[in-house]
Length: 588
Figure 1: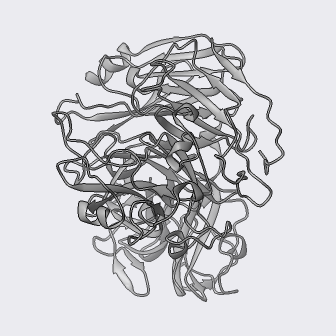
Figure 2: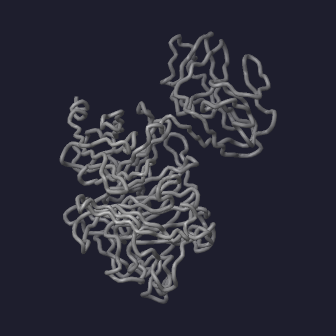
């Protein structure tokens, strides 16, 4: 069993029917020492052999390997799903007719509740951009996603590219978008980064971005590696970097992503504006959207040779979270394709040269350090996947590994002992990546980011909160402007679940509200108009339990600078509703 530990001085670290048959057929091989993390493992299996029209599934397993829950999906996975404390999931999946096609193609993001209600269904698939592979939910409620950006061969040649290697005559650069959910299907791009803005070439002095490549490790050589493929009998494409995973570090306000075609991972500054992200200055780093750090294959920026290459195809890069062993280090899965050491995979942990300014030290003229990872595990060359796969550090200090091509997930200690080993049934398809959550994860607090207009708003409590007052729930609102309604208006100081209120804000504002999930609520209605609110997730009117038929059809109104008839109740918003009499409804 190959396990490599290295002592690294942390001088630079800032911190550190079918359904039941499927369930019956699930195979599980595991032992349960005390150090095994008790919790839930989430994954979405799928693959190109899926029969057309068949549903896809997302599984949540407990520690015993039993299925706790299954979500049925109409689109196949592009990468891994994410579980929220309120038991909903966010999953990237494939649109039916993508505008650009290669491995990992997606185009669609779905936020789905435990019961299968779709809260958000967003598509990024057009002639300019096509989402693929990974997404990353952010603390503010927004989502990072990776997309191909289509460029013509002529555009690439004008930037210094010498050769286009695909019959499409296209160059697919990559971009990263931060999207703010907006209603059921909408999304607002609030930040974006494009690799097209950070190229360098040394072939034409008259062309943009001319320079000595070795003098600019913050940029990427537009002429490194091929662009796309003729498909080898399959689908031709113009994919260049093929970014496949993205992660966010809130403390540093930085983004990390990996490229298997460059055999590197990269870190950029997220504190920039979109304009700064397209430039070479600005943000906390002062470097705009240029690379702050890169590692894995220094010959991409002409500071190394083939012998110096450390990574041979990479997936699943991410930071080790706060409070876990190796905090601040970087984990990634090396597929091992075309490695001179042989065809086997490994999972590795790297300690980056982070300094006290949040930047990464590099010796002039040399490659970014360190020379090697601090931890490598390959189980005696015992696992291999040519595609996707991933690795995460768990809250008990163990590491979760997904071997995509063999639908295998296992939990391993830092000493190399495999404590839990699961293989999904069947012989076809893959598990792109899996994540494991502690047993107490689903009972934790929830934070919602809710937007309000300047002026009067209809508001309500979206979560269970201890002693909720205007000041604690809605900081930034105008003092003494909270008004409830019980047949007449009254001035309110505290808020009650299920009740709606008028509240004024001086300007447009986003407020983060934290509490525990409110998944169902009984609301007492009185004859006439009532001011109500919903629950912690989107609730459609058709799903409101109204056994006495109290709600008068067509009389549910929201307010966004003017009244509008609505079909959906959103968390944190208030609504007018007219009832034929006294009684109780249930929102769930």
